[in-house]
Image 1 (cartoon, rainbow, N blue to C red):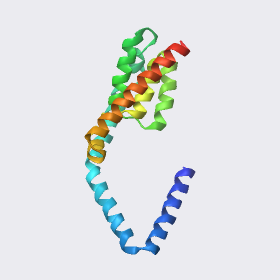
Image 2 (cartoon, helix red, strand yellow):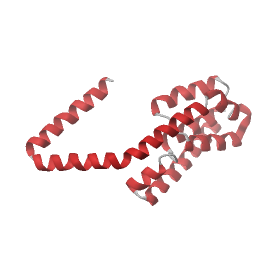
Image 3 (spheres, helix red, strand yellow):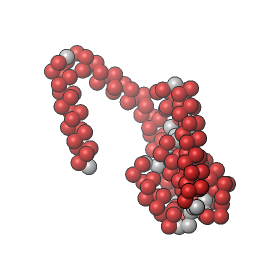
Image 4 (cartoon, rainbow, N blue to C red):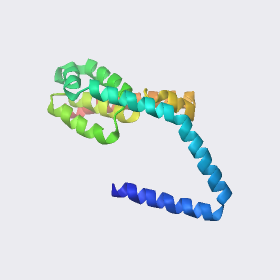
Length: 160
């Protein structure tokens, strides 16, 4: 909360400085950013809807039953798919991982789930394509999946 207030204060100071330095450019930049926000708003609302749906359907107990200790490599694949599709805020991912471990989920499966939840965004792919381009969006998501699987493999070898 405090760090957010600090960041907003710093942003406001810089915005004020920019406005004093060149009013026209600052107004133009604010107008452009507002237009970008309006263009992205439908995608953001869809993402929020899908996030709420995913959080209501994918409860920790359901996920734990799919990615338990005995699920092995198939559990890692399930975790990768679920983590790539679901969109969970970062402040929920770590407590979710802890809850999953407590409910019997295996470390590699939880590791890949948490990693893909944080880095892969199939739900946000259309918005990412509009913003950064199709090739970048696909390359980033594929690289994130590969790194998440590598991370799960390292956890599997080292921790189990």
